[in-house]
Length: 629
Image (cartoon, rainbow, N blue to C red; front, side, top):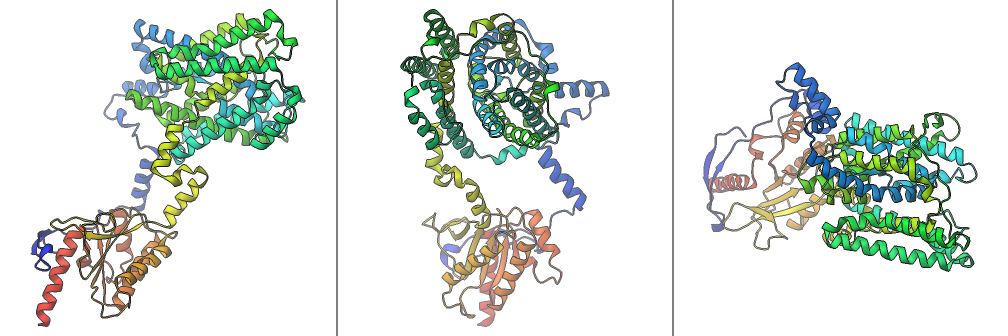
């Protein structure tokens, strides 16, 4: 609309009287396709503008900044001091107390030798300390990835029947997981992780926690012949079908230590300053149960033990990686699935604690750090690792100041590998099961699930979350707007009861992009509103204008353009004029390109606000009425 701003006085009805300055609608500045593509790629891949810090810097400074960007340890290392070291010593020793029993337990969950779990708590933390950007993340194996890796590989290879091949596939899957993770970070595709909604993660973690707990029934009850399936019915059937194998000694020990671990966890949650109680509880259980089994020789009374573990640091395993053969597809698939799961957990953990401490975590750098961590780990007898929530929570509560706490933890694990492995020979399997159950119980976030249920019932049902998103795209919301008396504000008629319709106007708001997936629905929805406004669909209807408020229509495709053009033609046949309000730049540009006959995007049918449109068009109606008289 090219006319100069003017002042319009609405005369009728009385509650419409308002002085309105009407502003011109101008087209967006022209941009070439290359410029648009460049802008879109920048917004998608570089939203944080990582190159901003290099602008205006001398060449030497740029090299320093680049090195610090790639290796965050070079950023905080020169400023490291004794005060920070004291905090990291406390944090590192505390999380190591949790990492050692968890490492052994989670390796068992993945059907791997327990020593592999300890290896995975030694090398990966050192890699993360050099490359990671989070101050709070504590690295190591996690229950969910361990369970998935073990269950996927055991579908084709038996960990007891062919342990060497199983170990080779586990290391190979870890390599592919790391390669996939690092590739996402290198290509700056971190936004893919954002497709996993909070509700989806809550539901997945809770479901996985239940599955993990059910899988520990064999250890907790002392059953030797137990199903490998993960479903609730097969697991419970197997547990009760083999009830003759239940061991009362195992059940008594399990119940005692599980209660102790849960009480310790509860104490630490109620009193954060006592974080060390929960952190030290698993190691206390391991030491105490090992002593009891050794003292009373209970391994001969139905209580299974870990057995002798190999001493020494991680042996190289690059010669065990299998990049050929019939199991290559299995390794790649397992690596992809476990890589996504562990990467999602690690980034969510990092973001959670970063928000608490008011600092930022670079998602793409975290992907590269976690990916390289797994790739290096696959060559040093480690399996999939990430930022573990339980360890990170302990690390955070222990007031870790920097990623150096991972180095301290790694050193303590190294000392254990070198000198204390024989002490774990009599550690009972039942206590490992209790540690796993107590750890995964924390993944069932009941308050968060209730919060999601309270806000959005559909979001709570994770199984339909994808269907819900498709529904939102294909069935966008359209709102009928009315004017709030005494103001120039237009709101939902069903929401704001005081808002009223304006005679001669049908005002609708479209609250979604318009594209091929929803243009047909919008066309049908429009006719429903039109028929409700004028049931007889007469050509001499009192309806004069249809106003579409489009501030939330962020994009439009060719199907959307066709929808608006067809809608305009239909309205003209009925003597009704289509008016568009608050078009965003991209939408306006595409509609203008389709305006070849100059009959669609007329200046007097474009406005910045609904108020300006109603004021101008009301004056137009009044002028036409005066001429008729």
